[in-house]
Amino acid sequence: MSVAEGLGVPAQDGVAHEGELKPPGRVKFFYSLGQVVESGYLAVNGFVFFYYTAVLGLSGTMVGVALAISMCLDAAADPLIGSWSDSVRSRFGRRLPVMLVGAPLTFITMGLLFAPPSALSPLLLFVWLTMTKMGVRAFASMFNIPYFALGGEMADGYVERARIVAYRLLGGIVATVVITALAYSLFFTGQAGLQSRTAYPAFGWWIAALILVFALISCAGVWRYAASLPQPTTPAAPMLPRLPGELAEIFRNPSFRTLFTSMLVFASAAGVGAALNNHTYVFVWKLRPETIQFIAYALLLGITAGIPLTPPLLRRMEKKSVVLLGFALVIVAWTVLPGLRAAGVFSPVAGEALNWLMASTLVAGVGTGLIFIAYPSMMADAAEEHEHQFGVRREGLYFAGLGFAGKAAGGMGTMLGGFALDLMHFPAEAGRQVGAVVPEEVLRSLVLAWGPLPSAMCILGALLFMPYAITRTRHEAIMTALKLKRAADVSEGRSS
Image (tube, rainbow, N blue to C red; front, side, top):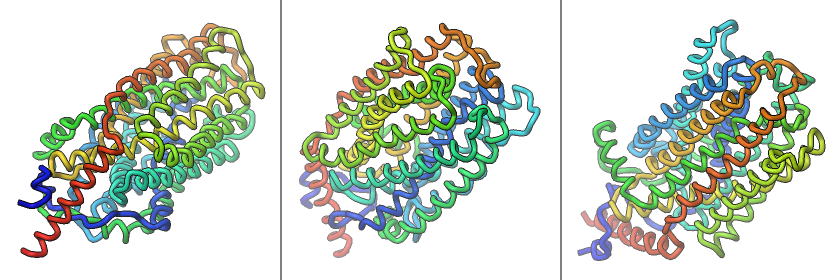
């Protein structure tokens, strides 16, 4: 009996590891550039809801349903993509071939999303939005799911893995700053700003091209290291027959279930707020178009502050505690200023509102940074716990599950935002009239749906997260057992 067998560690699906993985700084830099696909998509996604409702005139319900359908169908494809990337064998490694398919298709569909043919009926415009949005999200997932899984495979240390996520988030912050600056300084300028219909097609194609270029640079920069990582050595079974069993298997892990459900609720909350951002900025806070970008910068500044803050926190605290701190900061930011405005206690507008919004968003950004660094790192830890329990590696499916939760819930959150617009009887013509006046009772409902409602949902997400139980000590015990098993597998393979 081997040492690993004595520890009760099952066989490992034909993958052998030896030694601790830690990529050099150059690899982490090029890896971080790939975050432009996800962050770029999220940056432009903030314009889609406003464009199709306020500018093109679709009802909030139709836009919300279209975005929810596209997100949920895309999310359903995530397990297929994750399982596919888990089973790829190539001289470029498991992940890059799938990423190289997704990047150019993302470029095409993103451009089309912002360039619908003119004079479409509402029904056809609804279909166009649904199909192009589904295409963008599905093809972006073909890049992002293996990209995230690759980040989990690049290192196996408790803190080093969080550093890789920090590199990735920093790359995403830079991408978001560049895209936001281009949006408000080049495409959405002048008095019309976000209400200018002619600005959106050029915006979509230019940002799509930027995303494609950096995705390809990232792949070129990491491919040698990615190709050197262990790959499955046994032939993969056909995907569709094995996928139901693999999905049932990952849901047998309580750590995965906790991360999945809590992210589902948190992303729904974020989706509601994000859908209504531009409506509140334009109609409640009455910000000039060129000043809206500074709120995005405040969010990114907060996330940036969270990046160097997280590794020291992780050296002193458990990842679970760091995430709960992040939840607390987000809840406060989403509650205080919107609650005061809805109560009529504090109603700043224009420049005065901008300062308060930036301060509130900065706090939310710090909390978001803590959550977004720790969550992927914990999902990678849970994937190793899965390997320890079941003897197989499922990083692709684990990160597909995280992506599914985020996207499906984000779609539901956007749909809730669309329903909210129609329930509060937000005037459809307001978006096509620069300086339109919206009744105060509608504005009050809008700010409640934008802030306190997502905050309440975030509290529920934090409660669902509480059972997470992989501590530093637990992770070290898992890694010790896995390394012994992997070393034994390598030794047995050499002697056979």
